[in-house]
Image 1 (cartoon, rainbow, N blue to C red):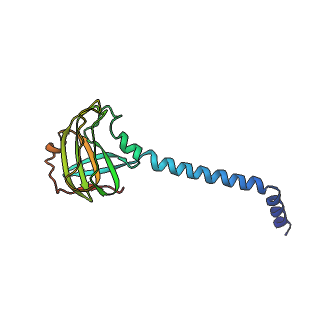
Image 2 (tube, rainbow, N blue to C red):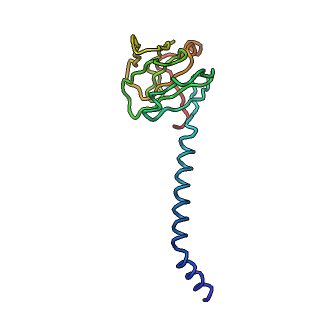
Image 3 (cartoon, one colour):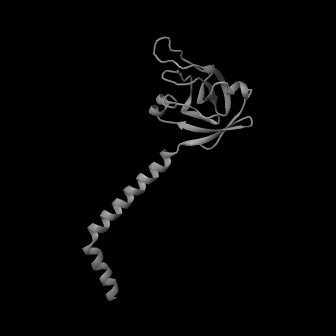
Length: 162
């Protein structure tokens, strides 16, 4: 009984400290979880027998920047843009440093393939690319890979969990 009374007395004296420590631990857990979630937002994309490491662009800022800050894209790398619902999403090549193939996807099917979209350094004469039908994802890879992999509209793309 004395031990229980001692514990209760300790809690009463140190309640502020215990509550403060609990809040700090909770805040740290939220920060760590957020960093883990956003720190490596990538997935695997498989087309025919080729697997790509895809950086995922989900936020408006990530989508606006896209690959424009990338100097070189690895042969097995790409960027996957994920949208909430299918629509006719426009893409351009302003500030890009290399040409790419743009693959529009709806669900798991290729809807449109834009081959060899070339960089543009200015907003003048900027080509705007759009799919033939509504799409909910866009996958960008190095120019020439769509031909090399013999990609066709209607083909299935396998995307690891998003």
